Image 1 (cartoon, rainbow, N blue to C red):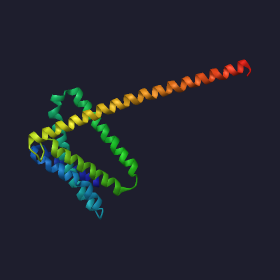
Image 2: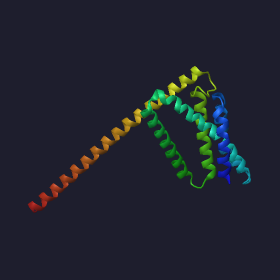
Image 3: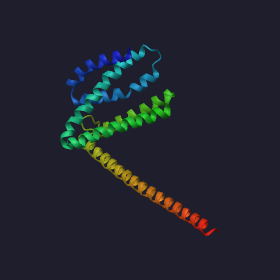
Length: 196
């Protein structure tokens, strides 16, 4: 029933958000971020039908914003980089979601808090770095986005460098281990042949 209500709501929400101006999408982001809190504090099962309606309506708005921005920036990124970015971000989302789920397991309050923290963090970043929905002036949002991009690129390069160095060190350790093993075998063979 909850899925049916959510699906029906998203159909009507698509009609609403498809015609909405970008400045209203900041409300969809803000209210969508509150959905996990509502789930935690829902006292009876019928409240979840209302929360499903609420979450589907504002989640559709947030999804539309992401799609519109992706379509807008795809031209400047190019299809190869844009699709790579989309795949990478989707993979990261799945990875972190799985990680949180595996650590939280049956501790639903911990999982809900983790989701709220992540959604609020994403909301904070969006309100500071996406000019279309930013609470700060556009030039500041672009500056913050540029800083975030540079830090992300630096982190990416650092992780690539650390991974490369780790792989090299691992190979060196393997070569050293194999060399010591060969020396040991030669030593044992020499002892056996010499009869010592």
